[in-house]
Amino acid sequence: MIEYHREGQKERDGKVIVKSYVYRIRFILSVIAVTVLPIIVTGVVLLKAAEQALLQEKEKKLLAITEQLDFALSQDFENVLREEGLQNASREQQIAALNRKLEQLTDQIATAHPGIGVGYYARRLDAIITYGPSREMGQHVGMPIAPDHPGRQVMSRRSADVVIGPQVRGEIMNAMYPIERNGEVIGYAWANELMQSIDIQLAGMRQGIYSIVGIGCVIAAVASGLMIHRGEIILQEIKEGLRRLSLDLSFRMKPAKGEPGEIFEAINKMAGDLQASRSHTETIIHSMESGVIALDHRGRVTAWNEAATRITGVSLEQAMGRDYEDVFRGEEEILKALSDALGEGKTTRDAEWSPRGAGRARLFVKIGTFIWKSPMEQVLGAIIVMDDRTEWKRMESSLAQAKRLAVIGELAASIAHEVRNPLTSIKAFAQIIEEELPAGHDSREYTGIIVDEVERLNRFADELLLFSRPDEEHHVPARVGEVLDQTLLLIERSAASQGVVLHKVYRDSPASVLASPELLKQVFLNILINALQALQDGGQLLIETEAVDGQVFIHITNEGPPIAEEHLLTVFEPFFTTKKSGTGLGLAISQRIVQAYGGQIFARNVDMGVQFTVVLPAKKEEA
Image (cartoon, one colour):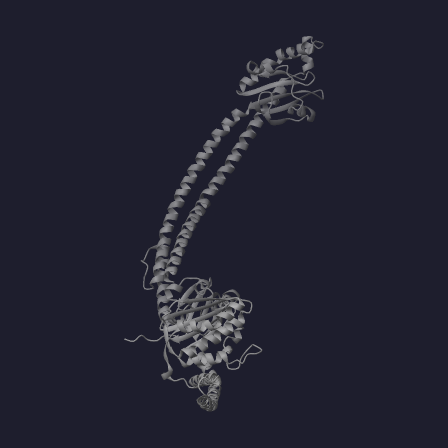
């Protein structure tokens, strides 16, 4: 149990360390997020705003150039062709004439704005008539625009527009301005710039902003790290101080300056108050005969006095800090009482609980639970108080049973005396008849049987007298294993016919007790017969023996249906039976025999079925 507790404590310590690191990382990330995240968000917003401003500036610039192109074209395309005398010429000739007339203009504007492409488009001719700078873009003159070209929408809507996407020149930002003459849209002028050039400018701007944001983040992270480091030092001192205080309330933290010093001083004062209060409280609790256990609101043990150790068999070191469900695993009564107290705020008074510790004599414990509240009515946990009522219960039960068994004892003594007198006469007459019969007569065999049976009845009458008034002189060393084997021989055939499988586990087979083997055989036989009657449909019957602390335990466990809780004590009362043909004396006589030898017998329901346990003092070895 101690090793199990140590392993569990190591596992819990490991989990605490892992949680500490997790909380530390979360705290660091939270502080960094609080300081660095606003800088990053500001940088992103600033970058988006700068990009948008640059693009808007480019759009305004390109639109201004298109307006300049429209203003520079003082007349429409038809007037230019009339001046050249080519209004009836072919499309190619008209395009060439317009290009010669306007190429110089677009080249001048393109030269004034490096990286900008400008030109005119004639709607009637459906062709680009000039594209400056002409030495780079002249090959596009005379080409029509695509049917889905944004320029067609500009002309149809008669409104300027800026479009980014793949067009004649490639991936560009293209500003287009409709050219209207005499209320008619004759084409449009454009000014565009390669997105590659714009991206280069955006990249430079991004790099600058990224640098500023990065420097700001580094500065913020360093400052946060220094603050966290300082805070961790203070928190570590507080944690270490609280840890040492949890082990030794006489420990005091060193004085410090500033706010940490005020915290340390407050902790020292609290420790002094707790030390005084705890010493007084512990003295009271540990001096109590009742077991006292305190749980916090999470169900973990915070207090455990010596009486609780005596009652439960669990030491203070094994219980402190553990969850009550682990400490009382399998003890349904106490688990329910504590669950009701912690979960629903219900208190329990005068409930009965029998600890199920292996190898321990059965205890009867009265338990009561109470809610543990602060002065502000805040639920801090629960308190359970245990009173060992085993001796009181035994005295009460023994007193009641003594009265009932006295009747059986007197009846047994009366029967023994009344039976022995006629048995003596029967034996005497049988012997007289046997003496008068000639040797070899057939009837002499029957008279011998009569004498033997009378002797057997006399021995039974002696045992009845022994049962009514057990005498130390009749106690002889008896090996429990041998008595059990002899008893099992009597029921083997019945068990096999019912399909009952017998299992024997003698852990201390040489164990001996001072008792009458015949009466012990009667005790075991009564219990085994009851077990067979409970296994009408077959099953397993387990017989175990063990010696613990100077006592011999005989456990007889069957897989039959459980006994009602209210009948577990009354099954040993005289004349109590749940069988139609039973007399209710078998178990009562068995208990009387066991008690006569300083032992006890009890029944309980277990996972396997029903278990009867006979406890007898072990025979002390002679020096």
